[in-house]
Image 1 (cartoon, rainbow, N blue to C red):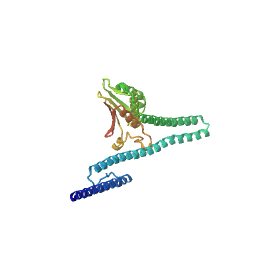
Image 2: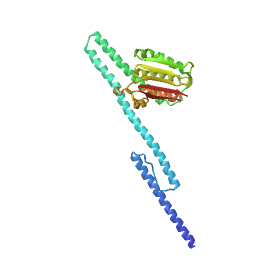
Image 3: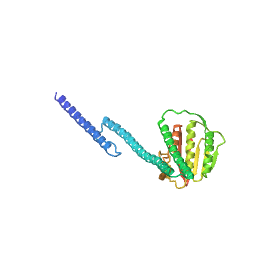
Amino acid sequence: MIYCLVAAVIIIAVLSVRIYLLKKSAREIADQFADRLSTDTNALIDISSRDRDMMHMADSVNKQLKVLRREHLMYELGNSELKTAITNVSHDIRTPLTAIYGYLELLEKTDDPEKRARYISIMKERAGAMKQLTEELFKYTVIVADEGEIALQDVNISQVLEDSIMGYYGALTQSGIAVDVKLCEENVVRKLNREYLERVFSNLLNNALKYSDGDLLIKLSEDGEIIFSNTAKGLSAVEVEQLFDRFYTVEAAHHSTGLGLSIARTLITRMGGSISASLEGDMLTIRITFN
C-alpha cells in the first residue's frame, strides 16, 4: 500500500513538472510570437522545453512567421512601387497637360496663322504622349490582371522577329541607329502565343529606340536564343538589374513610367521562357530563351 502511494506521488510530481514545463513553453511561444510581430527582426522563436510536441509547435509557428515576414516584405515593396508609380504617372500626365493649357492660352491671344498652327501642332504632340501613356498603363493592368491559361500554338519565331524588325526599321534608321540582324537560316518554331511574342519584340525595339547610342544587334540562334544588344553608355550594373522592375527607368530625371520591359518579362514568363539583361563595358545585352 505504501509503495503504491509513493508511486502515485512520484507520478503526480512528474506530471506536475511536465505540465509546468509545457505551460512555460506555451507562454514562451505566445510572448515571443507577440514580440516578433511587433518588432522588425528575423529572430525565430526558441523555447526552453525539449518536449517533442512543443518543439513541433514552435517550429510550425516559426514557419508561419517566415511566411508573414515574406508577405510583409512584398507588401512594403509593392507599396513603395505604388507610391513611385503614382508620382511618375502624375508627373507624366501633369507635364503635357500643363503644356497644353499654356498653349491654349497662347492660342487665344494670337491671330497669327503660323503661330496658331505651331501651337496646335505642339498640343497634338503632347496629347499623343498622354494617349500613349494611358494605353501603356491600360495594357499593363490587363496583362497583370489576366491570370488565366494562355493559348499556345506553334509560332515561327524567325518570322515574327523579322516582321517586327521591318515594322521598326524606318523609325530606327531615322533615329540614326544602325541595325545589324543575324538570324539563323532554319526556322525556329516554339509553342508560344504569337500576340504576346509580337508585344515582347515591340517593347524591346522601343527600348532600343529610347536608349541605344546608335547601334543595335539582333540575333536569333537555332536553339531559340534571342539577343538584343546595343551600346548604352552611362548605364551601370545596378541599373541593369532594375531594368525589368515595374515603373523603373534609367532616365529617372524624366520620370518615365518604364513599363515596357516589365511587360516583356511578364509575357515571356507566362510563355515558359526567361529574359535577362547583362552589361559588358558599355554594351547592354538582353537575352531571351524559350525551352
